[in-house]
Length: 197
Image 1 (spheres, helix red, strand yellow):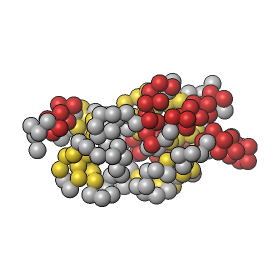
Image 2 (tube, rainbow, N blue to C red):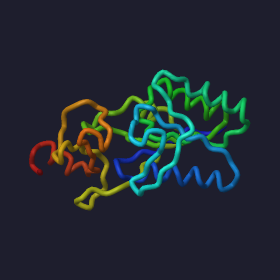
Image 3 (cartoon, rainbow, N blue to C red):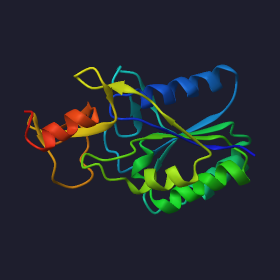
């Protein structure tokens, strides 16, 4: 039986870069990977984009109502063996889609590696990430640092260069003057409480 993996980290922790490196490692050995991204993540369209500037076209853009298990099973039936499934921005998937990824790992015996955020800019969980924390066989944190030098674990949202702590859960980086900064818990709370600007 293969496993469902969740590799999470704050913004700028190298999640997309790691995904593309894993894809390269499989393909260099003549193995087939399928890269999936939620359509809800409009950044980059049909590409995975890393902050290092590396990009890669995805194999499947997934709508919120699509059954990922059925889509992967169809590819297996038509094209043969899939050696690994890689999912970028997994936090945007629905609970049911995470359950389907679990079934892909267990029933179809395909290692399924998911990359995404654990929490949003208000320290709340995303539907997809919360379900993954319950179902994943392996959970790994990818680390980055805060501007103060400590380990960043949270995501601060900025609009027009100022931190905000209210608003919709999902706002895509680089759209509508939105950007994110990885923060350690102490700096996050200081910005939230107005002690830092």
